[in-house]
Image 1: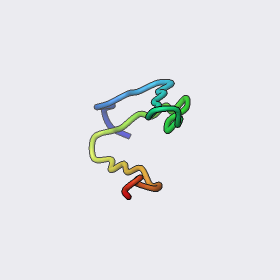
Image 2 (image 1 turned 60 degrees about the vertical axis):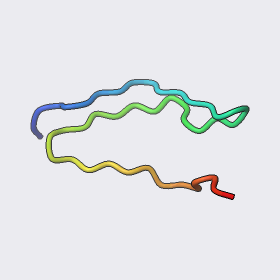
Image 3 (image 1 turned 135 degrees about the horizontal axis):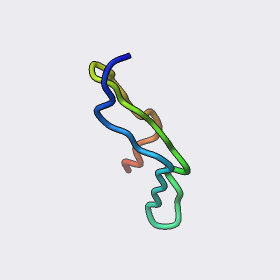
Length: 43
């Protein structure tokens, strides 16, 4: 593994009353690719 370029710990996010992130922690290293998969909420 290389150098950590982004570190997030215990992220929480709500949209209105809906919890969309709950206690998410992640380290991204140089060269990593990250994506979130789930419903997009489009109507």
